[in-house]
Amino acid sequence: MSARNTDDSGIVVIGLGRFGSRLARSLTHLDQEVLTLDRNPERVQHWSTLLDRVVQADSTEEVALRQLGVADFRRVVVAIGASVEASVLTVLALTELGIPQIWARATSEKHAKILGSVGAHHVIFPEAETGERIAHLIVSKMLDFIEFGDEFAIAKVRVPAALVGRRLRDVSPTDRYGVMVVGAKLPGERFHYAGPDTVLKPESMLVVEGSIDQLQRFATLS
Image (cartoon, rainbow, N blue to C red):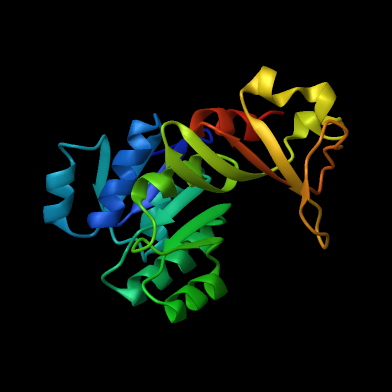
């Protein structure tokens, strides 16, 4: 099963335990193309009726991943939780494939350090994060967010490329995009509340409030 010509919407989820399966379903609900892998034939059989593309494979084998077209995807999530060795070897195999974004589940701080040292770009702790939250972070350009319910959230985003160098009064983010820029922070400087004359510098991190959908659209302006 090849993923050739896959665009940025394509995501691979490796490991169909409780977290991996929830994450795969959340990504599917966000209209993402999801390829899921697991070495357990019973799990594969179960989820093949509930998810679009489910394949039995040993994710620690680089050759197997390459044959499945995993190298054509930009984002891969290693959701393996039962075996630290398997998760680390899988991240190593993905690193060899040159995957640009490798998200990996950690079961301890020590495990997290190992994952980072072998090539994981993002380390996640499912016990503290929901599959739905991780799904939103993977598919968007938000760096972090807190959702308060009632379609309201606060997110941390980089200055969108389309808005670099412009003043907030000229951008009018509330009127145009439905979000409010609360503040900005340059590397090495303190956080500053934003005002009409705040200039959106390319190195800045913005704190923005709005709905999840509005924040995702704002973060991807180009």
